[in-house]
Image (cartoon, rainbow, N blue to C red):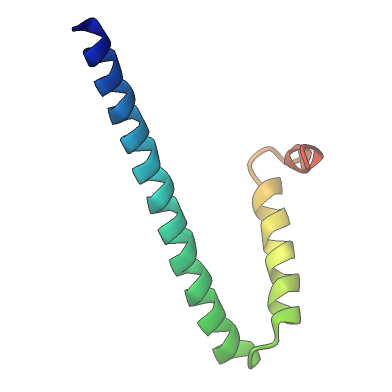
Length: 75
């Protein structure tokens, strides 16, 4: 009986984590499509400009909390 209880906990844990991952992926997908439409509207579909702006904004987001870029060292 103890084995069944242990398995049900691991199934709950797995289901919870899978639902979190699916939720994150769906939010990321939505943001991606919104930004693609913004790219078409503002820049006429030129991915070069939005890629450059994205890199700059990403670096700023990584820099601001700690005033360093140590997160990039992990790459």
